[in-house]
Amino acid sequence: MEHISPRGEENTKSLGSILMISTHGYVGAEPEFGKPDTGGQVVFVIELAKRFARLGYRVDVVTRRFEDQREEDRINSNLRVWRIPFGGRDFIPKEQMHEHLGDFVTNFLAETRRLDLEYDVVNSHYWDAGWAGQRIAEELRIPHIHTPHSLGWWKRKQMQGSRKDTEKVYRFNDRIDKEFLIYRNCDHIIATTQEQLEIIAKGYGIPEEHMTMIPPGIDESRYQPVRPAHVADIREKLNFKSTDVYSVGRAATNKGIDLLIRALPHLKALVPKARLRLAIGADSKRDKKRIQSWSKIAEELGVSRSVKWLGHIADDEMASYYRAGGVFALPSRYEPFGMTAIEAMACGTPTVVTVHGGLHRVIEFGTHALYADPNRPEEFAAMLSLPLQYESLREKLSLEGARFSRRQFGWTGVAKRTMAVFNRFRGRYADQEAIEQ
Image (cartoon, rainbow, N blue to C red; front, side):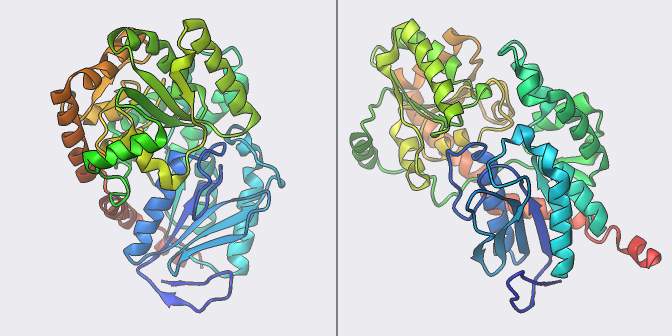
């Protein structure tokens, strides 16, 4: 298929043209990690798009243009991030994004028709892009493959009782209704875990044959183990110790940072020198407010001196921080998958993950990683303590965890499996379009 750039570049032949939509957060060739709504999903979309491009496909990653962002990031001759303005110039949290999605659809379709662009398939990410992607796919008469990343039905269930204004902030009722329509109307769903697939079937009444499970991937060239001497140098540079627990993520309630802090006194009873090193949040007022509330919990528990807030970690330093910890923790109340845990495992760091997510179902307990319920602080602390206390277990988790993550979650393999799903539906509406013409 021929692809026409909005910059007026010459048409070039490719294996096909893919439209990927991810509307919220700071999506770019070099994403601003730590910014609001900018984390694992952005990594997922950009890395998958890079592999599609490497395989010979033309890819447009379409997102929202706001603040002072450029219209386009050209990553290579096959791949760009294309920003469509809608909803004004200010950042919009993903919980409020749906109010502006109609304008996004209108503006995007106007540009594609003005530039005479064509695509073979729409691949949307998260429910906001899914809502828009379905309408775009119907207008362009091409298949729509949706990747949910997170599920409103499950997230609401896990967050019940965690805060009084949950419905007001997250608008679950409206989200779940729209998710149901997306799942029913799209051509296929790609779930990132088996648990997610089962939840969609149970919570939304979607047949399992309408879905395929394909796990996320990691950058194998970046996230890999290094020699013990190198680890020692990294720890000295970053002021880490072998008894430190490291965690990274957004300053969101479902990430369970408060639960990890509540586990710390129990951990220190087993490993007195244990500390938490938390790369959580960025510089937004909302993030600072949450971190203050979590810091207060640490003070009340008498462990504030053992908690260090690291703030935003630059992308090129992420692997070093993973390697520096004695153990990595994923304490989420709800986690669709947990890419940070996979990245930590790939770096050779023993890892403890939540049971409230899909990752724990695919790892072998005691071989690849450990898992526990972060809502039970004694249990979670006990699991964190094991690799810190026992060298043989630590070495086993380090070795087998890295092998497992690299073999199961390399991005090129993920891209090929995803493309196989796309190819099942490419050209599905060509005959219908020909008849109508």
